[in-house]
Image 1: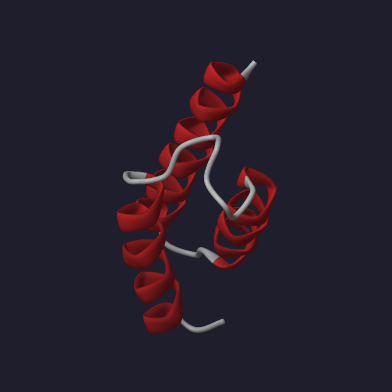
Image 2: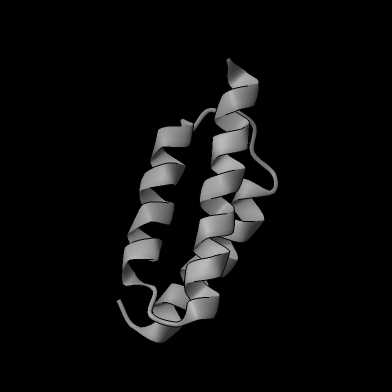
Amino acid sequence: MGHCQVEQDLEHLERIVARISAGDRIPLSYWRKRVNAVLAAARLPSQVERAKKLVNALDLLELSAQ
């Protein structure tokens, strides 16, 4: 995954994660896989930091569902 694709995916995931809830039609596990794939492909420190923020946001969503 190239730099531009990582940026596009991060932007998309940031928009989605800000709007989803634990009870949405698409399970959080799907979004976690997507975020983890971007995190693995991220090369710039800013990309890694943004992906880690998404991981944290998903963690909070999962906690709120329990």
